[in-house]
Image 1 (cartoon, helix red, strand yellow):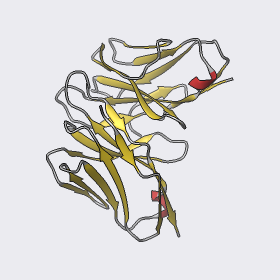
Image 2 (cartoon, chains in turn purple, yellow; image 1 turned 120 degrees about the vertical axis):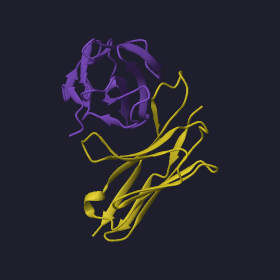
Image 3 (cartoon, chains in turn brown, red; image 1 turned 60 degrees about the horizontal axis):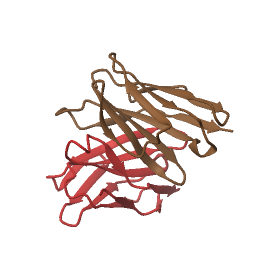
Length: 114
Length: 114
C-alpha cells in the first residue's frame, strides 16, 4: 500500500459527461501529480500541484482541470468526455520542495467512456 | 525536451538475472527511477538513484547509471515468476518549469519463464 488513495477505482460514463476523480496524498506529502495512462500514449504527465498551487503543467487538455484543496487532497475534473479519454488516471504524491525525492502512486481510476 | 526510451520486451528464465535498459535525453535530470506495474495495478516504486551516483544496490536490485551516455539499467538478480510485470524507467527534471514531475519511458514487459 503506497498510502496514496484514489477514488473511485472504476468509472463508466457516457460521452459528453463530466466526472471528478479524487486523490488523497500520503500523510505529509505536499505535492500531487496527475498522470494519464493509455495504450497509445503511455504514461503522460497532466499537472502537478504543490501545497495548493499549480506547479507544473503537462499535456492536459483544456476540458480537464484540477485543484488541490487546503487539506491537500486533489481532484481532477474531466468534462465533455470523449471516447478517447478512456484511460487509467493515476495520482502520485511526494513531499515536494527539497524533501525526499520518492513519488508514490495510487492504484488509479479506470475511466471508460461509452 | 525530455525523452525516455526503453525496449519493449524481455524474456528471462526463472533464477537468471534480468537487465532492463533505459536511455534518456535530459542532461539536467536530478533523479532517475524504476517503477513496477503488475496487471491491473498501480505503479510500485522499486528504487531510485541520484544523478551524481553511478550505482545503487537494494537487495536483488542493482541500478547502474552512466551519466555520460544517459543510460540507466536495472538488474534483477535471481529473477522469480513474481517479477513478471511491466517496468518503467522515469527521470525527474530540474528547474521551476519542470516542477518535480517524472517523465516516463514506454515500459518494458518482463516475462519470467519457469
